[in-house]
Length: 368
Ligand SMILES: NC(=O)c1ccc[n+]([C@@H]2O[C@H](COP(=O)([O-])OP(=O)(O)OC[C@H]3O[C@@H](n4cnc5c(N)ncnc54)[C@H](O)[C@@H]3O)[C@@H](O)[C@H]2O)c1
Ligand SMILES: [Zn+2]
Image 1 (cartoon, rainbow, N blue to C red):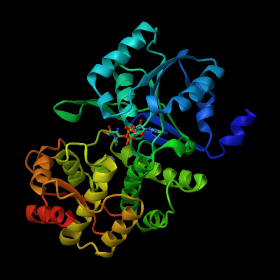
Image 2: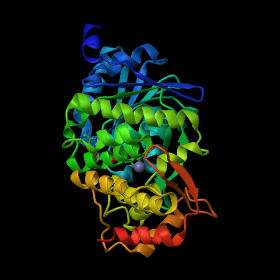
Image 3: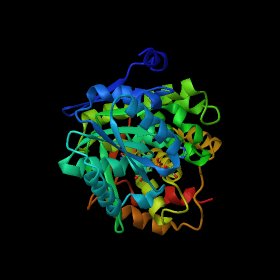
């Protein structure tokens, strides 16, 4: 217990989502306390530990912690990469769970980035009609975004995230120390979402983001920054668990961003890199449609560029293809293109059908 006090000084953030209470524990060293944090809430004796193959060291520590707390651990590594978000993997993992005797009262623990979080979350939502889920995100993107909100799912060859469920975790444990091994490019991708939160939340958070030194930055400060992003997302999700309206604000930068990702065949740009460009396009359209002061786009561009995120679209990616891909985005309404725009930081609003010429113009302006 003294170890618990020593490394878990900050109280958990607690999100209220529908009838669910989602405690989020956040602090350096918490990976070694996963067992102590989970055991008091566990209803069954076993944990299916689904983890990214790139974080085996963290998996060993999490397993030791769970076993020290008296839990039986079944370890299930997953190949790194988006290709693992497949129905074939869901079947493999569910069958492994069945062979290993995982029961309804047991738990799935997802240890990895958004890929493992989405995949393991969907396994938890589906296996025996749903078992408890614990998220232990290990990328910056997963910490500030995918581990919060309960969206889970896998891809089909026909489209990304086409099969899924909303399934809230019973607990989320974030250890910023897990980011020590994360490649710089992945850190920057997560930071693009952090910049998004800065714009959504308003000037104070934006200024903190803008002043951020090189990534990852001081661990305690990073924990504070992640905490503010998580708190923002939990607030929005709590108000709109099933994604009926308000939650759409989280898509700032994502309408054009998804279009760029898809048009570039999901290869040229990582998600966060496409969002970097999508944010700049959304701000440009906001200037024209909502009167946003141009200074915000300049400042956003500067902070994105400083962290190595793209601020100009590769000319090899066709503007026409981006527009076409936006039309296929599953989030796009059949009749209208919904975009989140910003009259000023901190005041996102959903805009139906922005002028198509403005949208095209904003994407054209991105081309170097
Ligand atoms: N559910 C949601 O609400 C939500 C939100 C945003 C994104 N997503 C999904 O998240 C996925 C992207 O997540 P991501 O950016 O975390 O990618 P990812 O899970 O693929 O992780 C990125 C890379 O980092 C490696 N990695 C992970 N943790 C590491 C660590 N600590 N040290 C070293 N390497 C590590 C992984 O092996 C991978 O190569 C996409 O599939 C996207 O659809 C879901
Ligand atoms: Zn995103």
